Length: 94
Image 1: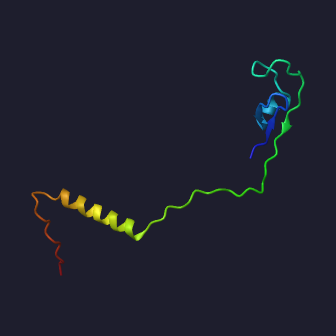
Image 2 (image 1 turned 90 degrees about the vertical axis):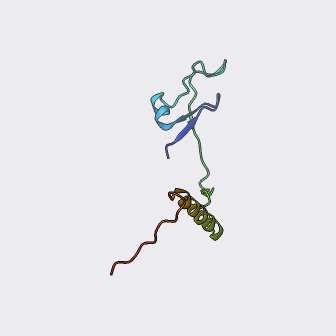
Image 3 (image 1 turned 45 degrees about the vertical axis):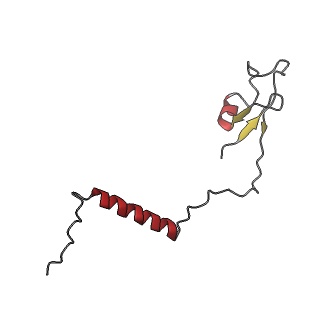
């Protein structure tokens, strides 16, 4: 992960590439409040590594959901038949 830096005076945050471009000093432009000192060193932001990574729970597939899906597929297949007649059964060729 890229390093992150923050100005202790105005609270603006920068990633490592942006902080390097401005020489690790707060730019003191129109985004800074009045009375902001000129040469303020940016400080690195520390992150807690002890926090566990939260993962999205997996999708649970249940027997009831599978049964509903099969019933919906059956209804769709009956709707697509022509003339309201059942399709002829397939025969085995020997």
